[in-house]
Image (cartoon, rainbow, N blue to C red; front, side, top):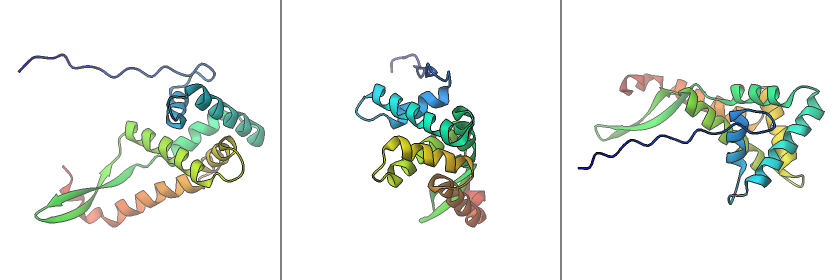
Length: 157
C-alpha cells in the first residue's frame, strides 16, 4: 500500500465585510449553484435588515442566534443485537456550528413567502437570537429526543 500524505482541509477565509469565519461559512451555506457573489449579497442584505430592525450590531445578533440554535445533545441510531436504539451523544463545537447554520438557512427557506430570502433570513436570525423561531424549535426538539432516550446513553462509545 502506498504511503500517501494526509491532506488537510482548506482553511475558510473570513469574509471581507465582517472579518468573521462564521459569516463566511453561512455565505457558503446560502450559496446555490456556485453563485457566491449572489449568496454574499443575500447575507449582507439580511444583516443590513437586522441592523435596521434591532438597532444593534448585526454580527452580534447573528452570533447570539448561532449560540441559541446550536444543540448540545443529539441522538444517533445505533444497532445493537438486532435492535436499533436512539442513543444520545454530545455534539462537539464544530458540528454545533454546522447544524445551527444549516437550521437557520432551512428555517428561512421554509418560511419565505412573497418577501425575498433576505427578509426571511433576517427575521429568522432575529427570532433565533430571542430564543424563538423554527430553528430554535429544532434545537429544543433535538434536546427533548436526547432527554427521552437517555436510558440508552450507556450504548454510546
